[in-house]
Image (cartoon, rainbow, N blue to C red; front, side, top):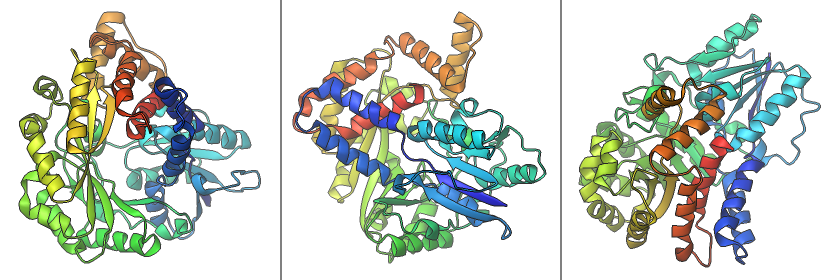
Length: 448
């Protein structure tokens, strides 16, 4: 059997969203095209299929497989490609290209299996004759799909039970060698999956379980060493939802990594890491860390609606905590949500003042309803009680529910984006605020 794995290029539609949002706020600015082109080059250099490389490593030896990252392919023609199966993965900003590839290969009579973040959340958008969709962790589900496909009986959906998550110690080391020719500016490893916090707006706990699961420290170190051998100048990123959620594991991991010359590296973390001096000593002893932290809101009332007690408890310590991290030389990026009931441009300006005061990177997203989250189920129940049964694809349902949710919070669907742009314009007169524009463009990519 021959399998062609493809990491689709970032969709033109996403870049159109970025440009449309930039024009909306900075029409005619001289720096407009320059910044857009830089952003396009950057985004295309940070996407690759870590899941695909992992699954490729676990395939039986009698299966021949190859991998293409379209973001580094000059010729994207598959006219002369011959294979039994095409496997696709991707995130929301690759969605448009994924659809194009599915249409192309199905028309050729080649079977397609699609997985990844977007396929898991929006499976209905993919399903058609000649396509199977994998929702959840691929290591176990792909084996089940491959068995059915080999016997000529593939199912349309393969969904992981959140209570039957894999043991990460059985997940193989990804085969990074197959993409060694690609010049990534950011390359990642994953050390943990799962999250116990169960924030109302987040779907991670429902998909990956409520407990932290870990790869062995030895395997993570091997993956890191492989990456540093192949891409010594690239930024290393840990693709965990919260690497420091389990402090004992974090201590063991960074103790093992302290002699690996990490350089500049990044990770998602929660703010509580700032209160652990010994862990901070270890984190700062190797390279230059970059922490992406979900602050979400500066309002205690809003924080209480999120369902994460840790965020509520730490709200009063945000200033102190950021100062602790900055004094350690740790680069901080903060994500915030806008669109809570009672939010306004003046409240958003308080968030921007916090970002400016601490000189951190800021990402402002719309407070939204994501499939698979507790909030999605709650809003769906409210919608059906008020308006009746909701029909359509995953995308149309999500768009309808977000319109309903935002109206309930006092906003039109486009209004939150307009308020964010209006608040940003006075602060950015010589360059585009691309982190914020990117966050808005990603939201658009879900629904447009």
